[in-house]
Image (cartoon, rainbow, N blue to C red; front, side):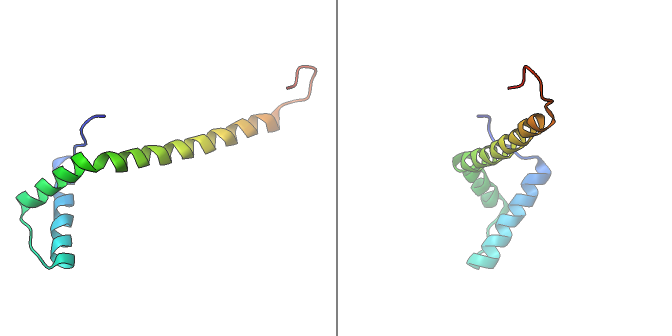
Length: 84
């Protein structure tokens, strides 16, 4: 798996959310460097779990859609000597 990386803009938004969380929920300030360090830690150590869950969810959606398509083929199939 490739390393999870964010653009500068994405990273700034996430860091801001981390800082807001620490302020609101923990009543503690956290600097930008520490918030970036925390983001890098979670991305490296936990990010794969979220990534894999997203892939699993996407795979399930695709499988359901493929089943629908397969059923649609059977619905429009014409009767004949070679029907399955």
